[in-house]
Image 1: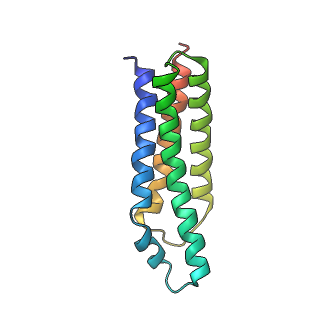
Image 2: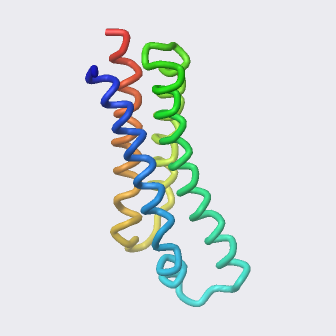
Length: 129
């Protein structure tokens, strides 16, 4: 297997794992916001789960493209680049959402998204080298 292929598969796996880890602590995340209304709890729950599901979907999409369309398929490169760009955008949004003293989990999230995004961009670009 080539290095570029391993980068794409690794990034896809990282997205899936981080998406699952993102969803698991939802109750403690909601509790960390203190007393908020039921409506706000529902919105927070929906947004938190949506981001986790998005990360899982990005990872599955990348891995599915590699194995179904083939690694050397231009469509696979395109999906890798678009997914990498999306992860970098999500990381930027996480950083721009300035929260006073965020928990460690929220501080790690943009870092992991940047790592996965850069791996996808590198994996889909190195394939032409």
